[in-house]
Length: 318
Image (cartoon, rainbow, N blue to C red; front, side):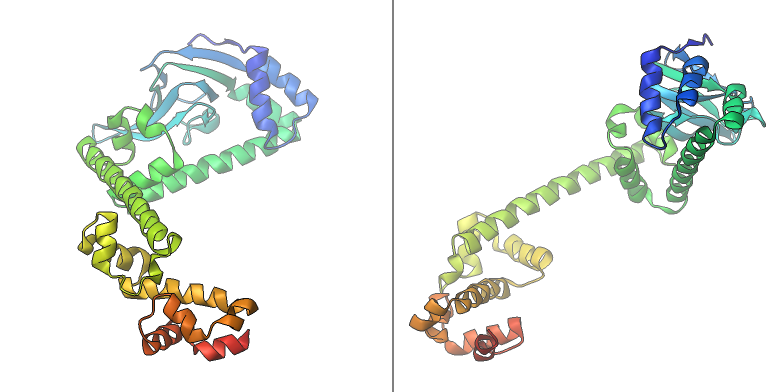
């Protein structure tokens, strides 16, 4: 590996990111300029061999690295990290004991690195370095623990959703078989789960579109004021099957068609009741009729069901 002294602009970027965690003293900053090294490696390069001692902590300026361990002659991906992430051996941190995993380049990568001897020297002199490293290691272990937990107990769908939520953009960028290995599933299974997830997102978007059309027609255009409004009419207006429309009301709104329409009518009447001018010219029953209720009893029953009180009691409470 050919390490060379890191460019000042690269170290500035690194210090800027670390400074967001904890203020860095000028002395520590100067030490970083002297001790930080840079390294360029090609895809497939083994940065650390399993069983060797890890002598460096790495910051990925560009590219992707993975951890890989061998179990029963099978290669298992333990993590994948990309741009602006730190990488080292979890088991062999500080080069004290042999690492249980290799570190391998998934893509061509540009790295910044610091040797463990230099790191230890900074710990002995700079408090801010100790604080920074503690925060970094805590986050590193939290991520590792959460990753291990979801792989152990989650089903394939939960593992996939966890991955795309915590690592946005990784799925499109990284080789499928490596992601599948990290999530402890076969590549064919990952492809299937990925397809199911896309279909489910498509279905969600379709549901949102239908709901927007329903609300625009019934509420926005005040179709609820039509006393003869029924499910077949709305289905015909929106060019959707009555069965699908009924399912949307039940699953999305938790209401049948009639209850949904009556709720819009009651909400409109409540708004009108607040206006003194309106109540000076209309009786409550007249308002109900103007909002599509065909009979006094239907209105009173719906009002009591939705508000828990009678129209007169509600009016008096105002």
